[in-house]
Image (cartoon, rainbow, N blue to C red; front, side, top):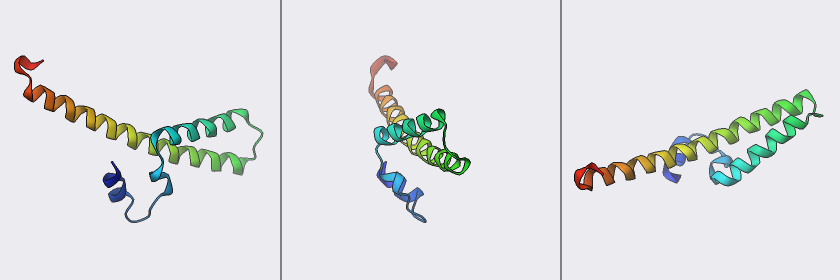
Length: 85
């Protein structure tokens, strides 16, 4: 996963790429709570929204990587299992 992230962000490294899934998810939940609570200026709300979008992308990359690993493991298991089980 780290190699894929390095290739995608080679032009402009993104510090969020170093975040683990759980950390990015928790930070995203914090952003959502802040937006739901209100009381922020328009500028602050926009900054929070942008941060949330970045964190959501990090989470999605982790989930996509996990899905690819599961698919590869299931395909390998299916190739080696007699009777297609």
